[in-house]
Image: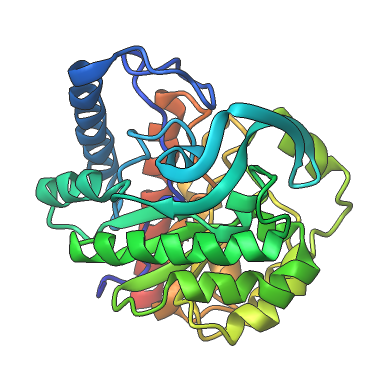
Length: 342
């Protein structure tokens, strides 16, 4: 990507109301069978068009074909029983009913590759595809088979690597692994979490990214953030090891968060997707607010390695608000591009 400050999104964008209930996570589909397949493709086209109209440089599918960023991938794997459910604590934050790992996990066929091929056919722009990271996957399940978070994470890493290689072959330019769990389980991240992530990217020639956020703008996450104090220094625990890793890009939450911006110095040399859009509010940022977040980040990130982005996915927002935020992201990035060219 030669353009200075290429813009992107963290992943999800709101679904149209004819496909699923708006502003809702895990919203059930309103269509079935062949209609659902066509509906997802129509929604993907629409999502792509909205990104293009807003001037987003690195585009994605808006996760239009997925109910959830983790479980939709897991649904396609063997060894997980979705009928056998247990209540677990997700990211030490809230309780949820989740499926159970009952046997060896495996992937019999590609999960998102056909969707990625479809997106590739629609645009010549660089495309990014998001997959759940191994640690966030194990944190969204009850394991009655491996009985070891680490063992299960390594198995998922191998499966993710199979999927990632086929996504790369389908024309994906950047493969992003979503790891919000990296902001919670610091010892595990440093002991084996980053290592399993490197297993997931093994052999890839396309760019790779890890997205580490403080979560969607849902009540459980916003309540948790209130307990984190004046400074959110979670990134500090894992940045030194991430800086030494083979991951190319790190996607972070920066705008309206209490993350000390100077922590970015710990990952200097990596490409950084700087979250300049707050997904936990319906207030649409002004271009100048976006530009200000980017200016702060540029003190610690080289300009040719900074990619303006959203803090997290925007699935729970209205389409109107999401459009406004995408427009602000592009306009704010353009302000800073002009300043850098002077």
